[in-house]
Length: 78
Image (cartoon, rainbow, N blue to C red; front, side, top):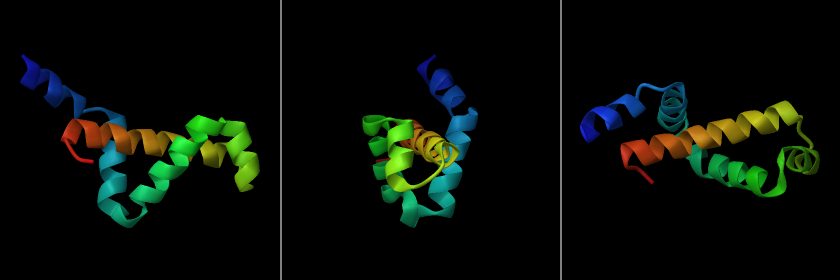
């Protein structure tokens, strides 16, 4: 039963986004994770203002960072 559950986790969009980012731009993973953790810590709007980016760009970085962390957790990486 656990095997079926774990397999189902790989079928999500979040997993696909994380896997794609890691496969296509492995050299950016550490920077992305650092940014997404800072966004969580500081808040979306505050981080966007401090970095001089739009709230939309900050949100995209946050979600992609979450996807990479999700992918790493499910795939047993990181």
